[in-house]
Length: 441
Image 1 (tube, rainbow, N blue to C red):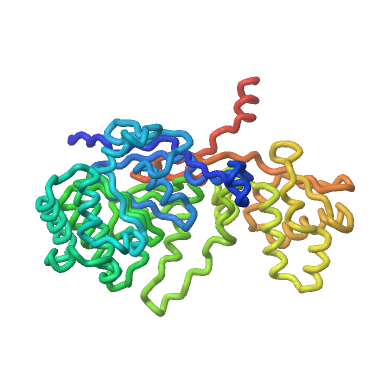
Image 2: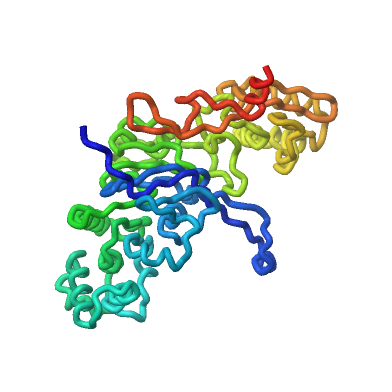
């Protein structure tokens, strides 16, 4: 039985946070009004020669994770090991020699090249910085070889051109030439085809595939385009709000998606057959604010398959009421909106874990409770109600008790090569309070 090769990269419990600066004074003083969890506890391995696709909506943390592999973003905590060497906490002086082996192709080829520098000079400078191919003539030959390898041939036609004289596809080929000229092992390709014409995209992906075969490259391919990921990637990791929610071989992810978010992404892929209509069961709502993500499973407010312990809270009650108000008459909406009040009333601190409080803006708490009970009776299939243990009024406010939330973990599914972070497939781990109660017994 062949032995499994040592991974090229091992990422463990990686966290990357960004402080929110509200204005110029806050930026000057270094004060923060909150934190965005761009990458939130990611664990993943990357094998030599593998193409790993990081897929998700904008703001899911894909690009931040890719940049962290190259040391362009510094993690708050966690580990990134490249061939056994820890990169987190490594000084810039020690990182620089490694960057020759770790290169990146950015999304915008127009911004990746200095407009006042010829293509040959851009590639030559990269070689000079890393002390490769000393001597002007030797370096020029190396630049020419790199250009011809990416299809800019003859090199003499392109080496002295400025970026403004090239098309978008030619610019991206020049960017790729600059990266491979250094002899890298890993290429992080961050949406490398998204800003190119449709006629050019397949050619660039074909070029990347040829370079993988010829040079033995390993790729991290960052994209929101599942169609290109299916064509190019060996393995896919689906990201949502900084977390990996599903990962596995490309064929299995496409043929048998498990996580509800993965299913939603696949339903959103355009179908070239005009007789097929657009899917109508796409996730409701918008991607939540990354500075204040939902508790428990981050996808649960939009999930049609959510279960009681997914992490329900008062913000979800507000969302259900807003959906109700799209179905009622303007007069009924006006009356109920006056009773409920604005969204800030749903953001008050919980008086106890798993308990929410809602005070009426006008009218009585009993009227507010009657509104909530009416919505539950008229829409019993709404997943939120499975997570509500009970609702009661004390005359001043409505107290809502939720099922205790649990955070899903990325765990393997028996009999497959897929890992998924979802309560539909794994029993929820006991919370701290549940663990303390069990220990006391």
